[in-house]
Image 1 (cartoon, one colour):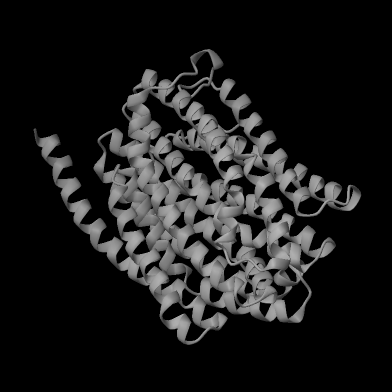
Image 2 (cartoon, one colour):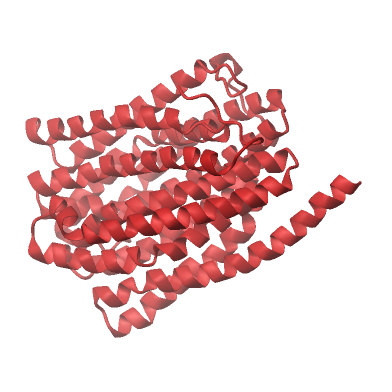
Length: 452
């Protein structure tokens, strides 16, 4: 396995790239394996099954966002402690994070199972799709404990600069996921429950592998069952940083649920097309998001080590690298849009509508780069509340307003999709202003402490 990265010394650009690209590959592979769910049911079960799986995407993202945010908080706390060379506290933080992930996953799985019908009934899912959507949701959320365990274990490795180990574990479990998809659907004649079960089992495998490699670690992030206990103060720090990040992710998910509900009203063709397009366009998002997470970890470690110049430099380099690679990838995906959509469904109407979504989203991803880098940098400094509030107003506020005003006047897919670039522009502008103010204040404190 790759050795943990030294983020406190030496060059920055190559290390940022070495951190971000495996992380992007992890996200892309994860999405490819998720897309396999939709592709298998779309090809071998039917268009309604494909729509059922796709309609679950925003509500599952909403449920996972809270814990994903807290895992980012764990990443920041552990990275900062590593920068401060607090080895004993790093050990406590690692075990606190993993215990919280598993216990929280059990609680949320039970709650989601009990409220599953009520949750999906608010999604405006057509009657001919609802039963399959509910079946998929119930099987999927049963795997919440192992899904969250994978997320938090990955965050621990990232805090030490290691993004290769989670990638290797995901690749292994993902291949198994695809094989299980085909086995459950083609051999056992299962439908959406088959692909959901395959996802749960593959997450179990990946989380077990990550725990195994954490147990083999020789650094301060080493895991031991005998040390498994909760540190209330460290958990509070993770939540104070991670909860706003989780809220930020939930804001995206809530706005997407509102948009998905509007998409569901436009019929099964639009539902299937939007689902297929989402599973293609998100490849570009994983790239831009990986540089945001790299920025968070670099800034977090160097902030802990009291190195302000490296914090600023890492942010600038991450932004430039992210912009170039994300825009290039977005244009490439758009160029290959039709053949990519054809993988999911060969219906001409589905492909035509899917291309509309790809154009609106992919041509605006450069704006999203600003949001991810600025938010990631501010989280690295331990300031997650401000970007969460800005995203709540800019993303959720603009999209909800658009859905209930402009879309009500003209209910077509193109009008609905304009909510994406408009909300990103408003949010990016506000975040840049907030970051400029925060950086000026933070740097003054840094240099005042050095002079003192």
